[in-house]
Amino acid sequence: MGLKDQFENEDKQASIAADCAQLMDEQVATKTGLSGLAIKTAYRAFKGIGPGYIPRVLQSLVPQALDALDPMWTEGMQSGDPVKHLSQNSSATADVLLGVTDQKLSQAKNKIVIATYKKVRKSVKGDVEEAVPGLAQILGNYANTSI
Image (cartoon, rainbow, N blue to C red; front, side, top):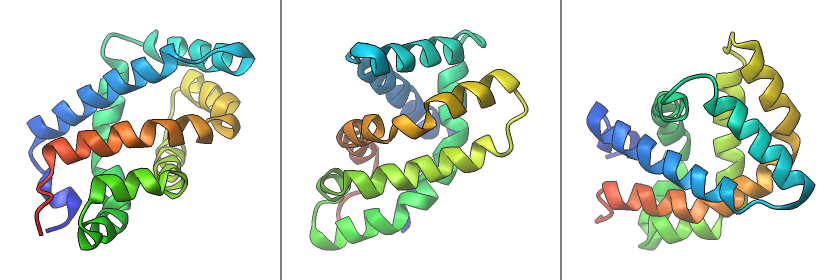
């Protein structure tokens, strides 16, 4: 069973999105310096679009992200620990996730979202890599990790 197949239930997807939104809040809060200021400003702009905007966007990304992460998750299942596998391959995992958000952005119509994302896109890979262990754990909390 693929990773996406395990999360077809919309309530489960909403829970994953809510957990990821909390993870993002925590990750953004730890940022410092000029790059941290840029990330915090961009994040505030996204959150300012409307109440619940971040969890809604994350929930809309969940199916595509799960689909994209499925091959890596499957490799992790074969090695015995998909959470550890994603975490140990955080750079590749980040590339997959950023590919999903890049694709989603190509369909966006909100000019604030497009401009803000483009401003921070080049500098966020390291931030996404730092968040991968937390994301992997979230997925592990909801997925069937037995072979």
